[in-house]
Length: 165
Image 1 (cartoon, rainbow, N blue to C red):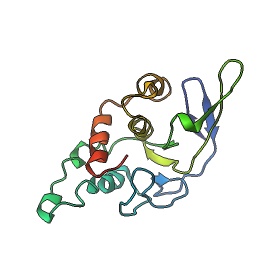
Image 2: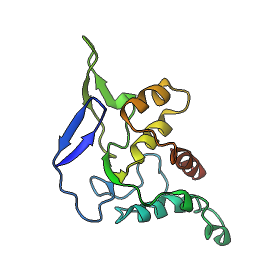
Image 3: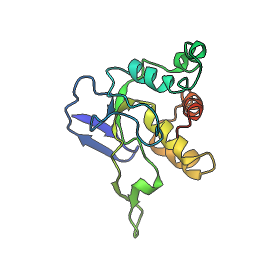
Image 4: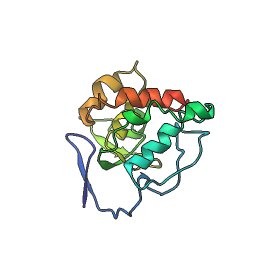
């Protein structure tokens, strides 16, 4: 039994079997997924470290060989983070809310990118795809996902370095 906290007020219990070497998408298909378009396919990964090796290598892909040896982002990625199940594409359009009465969540849809990722992944993805101009990012996301101030700036710079989102 795995406990998934979708919100501080909504908790879901899901029974799943986690196969060894399964860090990545739940369907065990390789990355890329949305935001990693036009990147080399890879995964699933056997560890957080191998996952970080892959996403950090994307920032060096178009550099000369000499520069590729030095990856600015790799030392900044914390390999000791827990692996958790995430939706990986949480945004307003994927949360269905009741139209009448007190608002309540009816469903969370579009699970195609869901899977097992480092514990910062859901927060960073949700904030990054929402953009800094939205109330959603600064007001609503911290109400149901744990803020990740230590890794979020690194995540943003890393994805922008290879054109991800």
